[in-house]
Length: 556
Image 1 (cartoon, rainbow, N blue to C red):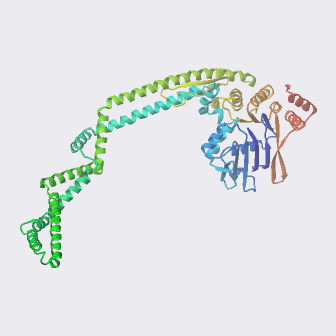
Image 2 (tube, rainbow, N blue to C red):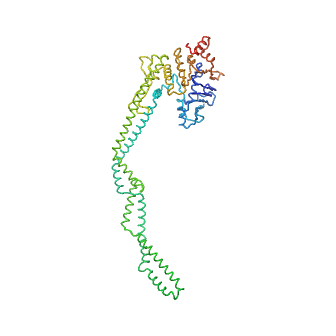
Image 3 (cartoon, rainbow, N blue to C red):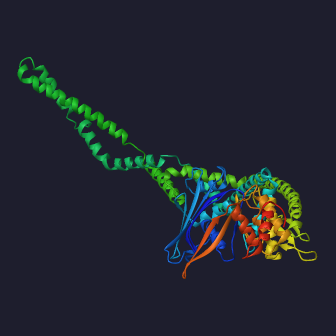
């Protein structure tokens, strides 16, 4: 509920601090005293459009602060969580309106957007008046109100899940159909590409291996003659090895005669022969490595160039060709198996739609049953509100093409104010006073069914008197047993039913200074105010006696 309201420098209100209680609180006062200003301030803090004209004359800015006491599971806290606004179970909204037209909003002292305030407002307070064009008169809310009245949340959840499953099945079928259409347009290209890559049979790392082998063979052509010349010099007919070996043998035979002189020479010649042998071995190895068939170079180059051409054609690197071949093969397979896959997906759509239709039909039946009960309950409230000749109905219309998460129905609250007149939407058919009483009857029936915790009624008793005003007061009091009710009223029968009473008065402080004050009335004060409402400016003893009887619950 709304537990505290603070207003600073808004129109005629200089400073106001109100502690509000549960139950029903009425706001009374002379016409023009400023009751509407208080409601404007409340609407402002709940996200209504700001205006520089709301700021009290001579002030730079005005401010409204509202404190709400709510259960921890109230949906307003879920909204705050979505907006990353900390709350710890408390909700304090502050709105600052500057005289230059700018406005700022805060929740728990954290700056927030106007969009968030406008989203929070309907969850916290509903304002109803003769010319109110929101809340219950908005056809967009009627389906949700009927569902809240019926309480079939499990069925609603099942329909929402079935709707989601149907959308997912349709999306999967549509995506596959689009792929098939694209694949069909490229079928010839796909088949030719798959055949080409299958014939080419690329392998990962093949390009690098071919490039290295090609480079080696091309290098071999350049150095083969030099290696052959080295082979001839070391191992050919002109090689020094036989000469050196013969010389070394002769020296060895003469060694004993001149060992000291010949031994170093013999050793050096031995090392030379060993080195020449090693060189010959390496030359032979190199010659073996350089041996290749010239046709191998040609084949290697053709294979390498074919891989690189395919890579350019399919816009991948050579190592990506195997994966590209697999992808194209998958697409071709999908195209070839399209009939079976598409048939399975279309069956899934048909099954999902049948499930949705079945649940939606059950929801329609539940809504039609609830609509009849709601109409009966509202109808029972109308006679005491002097609408005994009027008729109320909740029309449930089903659109076979509508497959929303909320079902296939639209709901509209329809009224007929007098026999023989054409039924129609409340906002168009009912007069201001009639509309207020229809709304009151609805709120009595729907009070604990998805209602905001605080309901504000702005002069809904205008033009009503006697028994009608008494009936309105009784119903507002019944509402107040389940939600907090704030009612701006001119009817003493309504004021007498309240748990709390606020008197609003306008005081002229100086020729150019006027201020609106709000006073909480005690029991004697309530008696005087109700007597004033009964008799006017001059309060008589008879009026006080009548006021006393009203406050005691007696009819006057």
